[in-house]
Length: 219
Image (tube, rainbow, N blue to C red; front, top):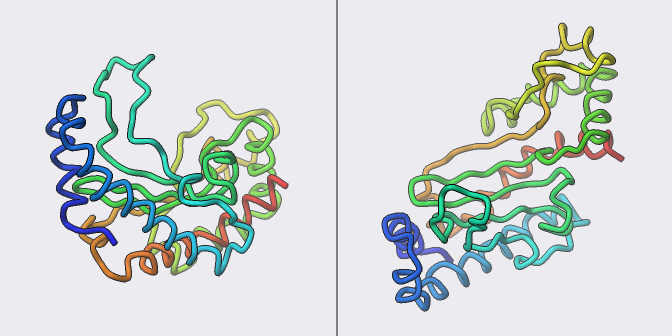
């Protein structure tokens, strides 16, 4: 589905991130990047539905636009130099729910997921679930498949904890996290594999037990 020109286009875009170049290469973008990526995300979603049957999102629901919002950014380059998709039950419409993430740029492939966008109450619920059942949580983040693929939980942390967690964080430092996500950074040449959708799905499946824990906590 994805070929060498997919990665080559992303590289050239990173070197020519301007509207003139993009407009001259727009047909190439459509044929070498946009359409093949939509097909790939569709194939990945099919695999995910084998263990996440509630995922009804389409590729277009999941894929981020390549155009950057530069209104509040010092960086005025108009285009993203990567393609990405948030893989949840409804795609971008419910990014606050635990799910999965696919990101490809020239030089990097990222496969991961977890609970990234947590508002105050969902964060409190996740922390409470960890505090009440630390053994299950440690088993999930310490499982062989999870560690081999993702190594650890990532995310920003609170320096000052809410009173209800101040004592517990001493014995369970991961309670300090404001985000609970996992991410593998892999050789992007893997996207050229004929079995890439299956390859990607093995990573997402390894993260599903942890996502199930987060979903049960959030309710």
